[in-house]
Length: 198
Image 1 (tube, helix red, strand yellow):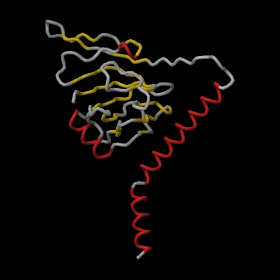
Image 2 (cartoon, helix red, strand yellow):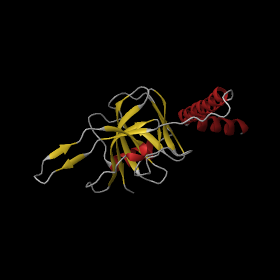
Image 3 (cartoon, helix red, strand yellow):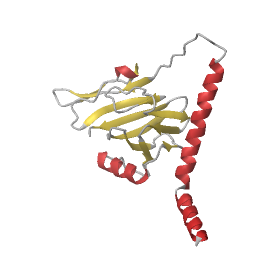
């Protein structure tokens, strides 16, 4: 009887193994980053490190004649991102570059313990209540309902193996649904983001 319970416990652990691997890997990276940052600054007493987060916004405006005019995207400080206007139900639509950002704000910005962070050339990691899931259906772009369902079914704290064109669905700590389309990878992960209102 004790063996049956032990085997059942192992089955449950194995069933959720990929979640454990993701969680442990994220924890190891976070701890390693913390200690690497402390050791590199321990010799530099009295210095302050400043991080700059940038976001790029591309705004599409419909003119009075019904034509569409697209303004070119420009890099901006995360505090200068403008929300989407004129699209019902959309809180933010535009180009967003990750470093580390929280998408619950109209102007995405880093928030300690509640952000999505680029942890590698092709990896987004979330902390503080975000859920992420890569959209697996080819030749389709998910809307709000599809992203909400995909995140509820397969959402986790990280997505990796991203390539240009990958679509990532997610939910924020405050319950907003979002979609990220990967535009570029490398030192930063550039995305076209859509964040819907609750």
